Length: 386
Picture 1 (spheres, rainbow, N blue to C red):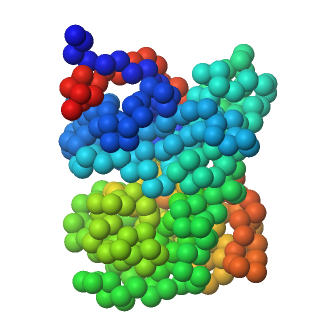
Picture 2 (picture 1 turned 180 degrees about the vertical axis):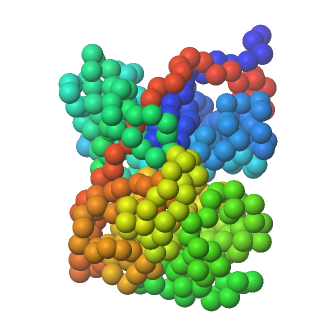
């Protein structure tokens, strides 16, 4: 009897994240068994993920499950899983926009979608949020293009530009762009006090607050934030209270265990000059509209997540939010430029006023992706027989 089971998969970089892309039929149907298998694939829980392919970083502990479409208006189904490093948990609450950028190329290269040159349009059913993401993927020689001159901060070199349209992801998790109906709310946070926040849901829900409320400048590096346990405790308390406030958890204490991935939390500040922690260059305040430092799973993103970008851009376009209030220049510009630790990320945004609240008209962003390795991953047979 074999001691290990082989599962076919592809290792891909999508944007500033990396993970396995696996066909749905490679994994067990039973959800509990499926998650045990996924945890074994990544070597979780273990802070080093030494017995799997996880890179001991939330940005490299991500998973895309791909399958035939279950909606008539889609070409493929895509389920995102955030694999916890320290807990036996795979979180399917929200989506990862960076991993989303690899779905179109994967579908084309696997023959799930007919390759059309020079651009193949892939309609992706994002099952976590039950929304459609449109990917426009450059194609050459019947395969997704890799080479190109498009550069994204947080990834070395350049690649072929993949355009993603997230305009269908308004209210992705809560059903409303403004889950509370307000552009700003005051949270009474145990151990922190009253905190003014804007809670916005587009792509993924994000809790925004001013960096100054936490004694920050907004230019901090990941190591500065991640190394401050007292600060992280305050941030998680705020995030937990916000999750309870919008009904994602019944008690804010539960958020760390039952919903560790979303909502994200972002601290924002007016534009300032700062040194990028990744590309080793100075970012001028004229190059950005505002600063943001975003955290998920108690780690600061080393760049900026795509779904977080969509949500942050949406918030910047809604008068009265804390993001809109710190943003410069005029909010009439369709392009929103966010200064993050690795540099700058831009998103094309259009938000309109509707009778029941803001409406997302446009949310487009460019990414690159690359297939790194394909083959089989081995999972101990005992995992499947437990």
